[in-house]
Length: 371
Image 1 (cartoon, rainbow, N blue to C red):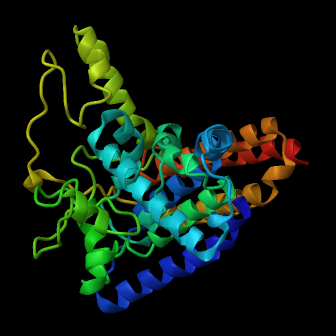
Image 2 (cartoon, helix red, strand yellow):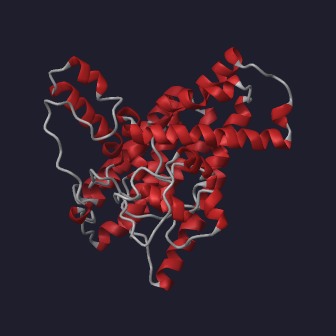
């Protein structure tokens, strides 16, 4: 499965370059280098941390399949069985996605995907590292139905890959297709923080789930404002994954109510205990665009560093099975530090010399481990 991602890297690269080129020539560029690198860094981080979280993504499902499966026939190996498996995965994914917007502890993991204030193909690859930890719960019905783990995994990959193309501003409304499937128009609404759009259109492949369960919102002439209502304002990929957990722990620590210390994790995002001051109401007119200045040297060095890390990531996935768990863990740690240093440099919190020193030290320490 890891090698499929390696094969997909050139495809994703071509898609991003094509969208960027079209945006430049059409006068509607939707990319910023710092934001795109941040998005792709999150995608890398989400994949390498599967060394630790993969047990939740497929391991628990495989165990449950062996314990609770009610059917072990060949239905799922037929073409219509595969189609049914994909549709059922998408249905479970709708509820996983919806509750990830309606429950604090799930939102803490999912928020990463929404933090970008741009909307393009790189945003699609801004994936969450902690998402599998609790997400497996929503897919247990598929194990009960007897969908084999390999079909479950490929169905999930199919639904995920479908969603890449719907992250763009360059495709308008598509008529009847918008009424059945998740499309760029439908998904722009989902990523927007406007009052009319917030928490709508959860469908991954099909939008019919939203129409059935009352969460559909059509895109109107109101311009979408992207990001999260509590802005991240950082290119740090590690902090992006931790910030909402920090906020939840902080409120749970300061409230005097033991009931609220538990309740806060399961209430909608933004809910706070009575003895904790409420945050001011969201005002879209006060949204600021996070875009710290970058000298040309930082741009060029940042791009070169990211390409080096991307190469290391591809090599890691390709040879992962031949590494021991200890070696995999060290490589994950090394790449995470590299991505962290890159983000710090892009936002002006670290000089190029210091970032170069960190990256070089990581490389020199890693060589003996893999040789």
